Image (tube, rainbow, N blue to C red):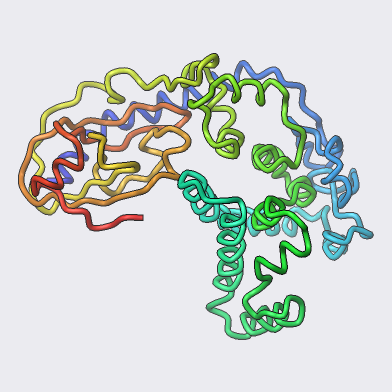
Length: 361
């Protein structure tokens, strides 16, 4: 049954992906930003010039022979240990770049924790304590399959912080004197290393989100004018290009501009779901929109803050008919998921015995 739905959607989804690619190409075609071309042998260019970032330049130097035009400063306390690497060797630099990208993926988990706590009204101290403890856990988990490496990390933690699990929230607060700084330090923000690895532009919104670079005054004014429609500040900066797109948000009020036709690409159709089929949803049980379980998040074309909302998986327990179709590209996402719009709210379908929640996080 699920295969049948996906076959029906497949042609539509292919069109979605092609159109999405065209939209993205068109969007970039109008980008006339002046770029800084690094002196590196790769001819790499930056939209945001790392040389104007004091925090980055405190740890790195311009290096015309380096792949991305920069290398660690040998006298840097933070990055000096990496200065001996051959930053002119594409194999060495590419390996370090891949490792950095993988390491940064851990931050996604911490974002979920932080934004969930902020939505719940948690204090800055409570958020700092939680994310710093979670960061320690992630660092240990990174070595859980290597007992020798794990033992070394724990011993190093014990020698440095007096706790084998890593620095306690109290230790970090005493060191930095601010719970906001403790939160920031939990994330892998290192603009100097990013510049050396050609990742500075990729992570620039993260620097904005955590105040590591100057924020444009018009952004601050915009969020103030949006009032209750303004997202959490960090979420705004992490997804700034989407929030600043007038196709997706009214730039004066912050009201969301949802895709036409209830978010469907092409004509949806009525379909009877049968017991055993799975649906999922981000958000509360008050909504009616779900998706056929199994598609990637990007295929949902969801608003930027959606991924930080509660996520549920449901199993169909009694047959019912719903409107089914492909998700259209929107919010700079490709679409293509199978959207299932219920006739009534998810909560009412649970209460009526049509759906059973089997996962919640």
